[in-house]
Length: 305
Figure 1 (cartoon, helix red, strand yellow):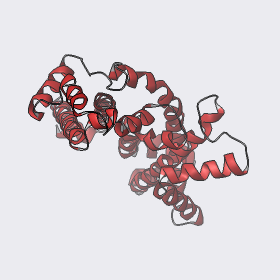
Figure 2: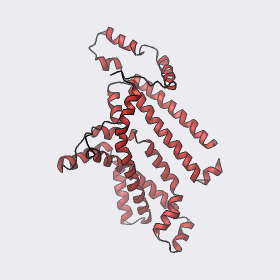
Figure 3: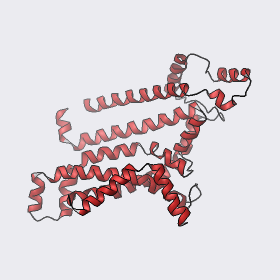
Figure 4: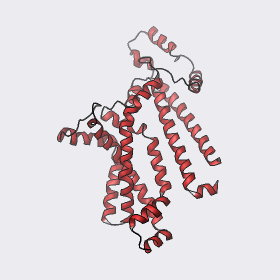
């Protein structure tokens, strides 16, 4: 219990730090009044805008007022259209999950088996081939990969649309783009975890008994290599919303990521803060879930607490 309480306290501090950092960086990066009203607006109009949104108050007053509003469940309204900031973010979540959830499942289906297969064929051409693809997939930025996907499958071959949100076909390229990098990371972590386990005496004993490699993997190796794999999987789960920012912009996908980019460009403070707060909670929640699962499956953690 102390283990989870400590992790929970750290998570609360993380949320506070992110909220604080976001609040001050947004206000230091530009004047919303100048962005929304334009630099040619009369000084009186700019001053009235700042006063109506409380931007003329000292930063410390704005900050503590913002914290109080969050605790009261008030996340502010958009400076662009007056809509609830959190409502705008929640409306965009289904579109984001429509590509990030399938991409997450595809990462698992590709990355974990590839890592296991590479570990069982260590130092062979199979291992080197899988790890080469893994390094390439992890190293390539998602916006570069997305553009390549568009050029190959949309422009050259004409198989899929280059962007939009009209049908399931529009989701294929974003899903593939999102999954490749994560699958590459999972393959590398799985291979490392499996290699550490495969050198243990109980694995050699199981193999000496004549058990098939599939039985050795499923019954003996994977359960003991689960902790690091579970940790990286939890991080990917927490980043489902944040991880789509670039890809949604490349493919004109109307999700949370594209909303954040648009709100930052327009200095729509409340929308940016609400979106980043939701992203932070999702990542912190996923980390807490991973900690709880590690506590359940790893006796070393339980015995040390």
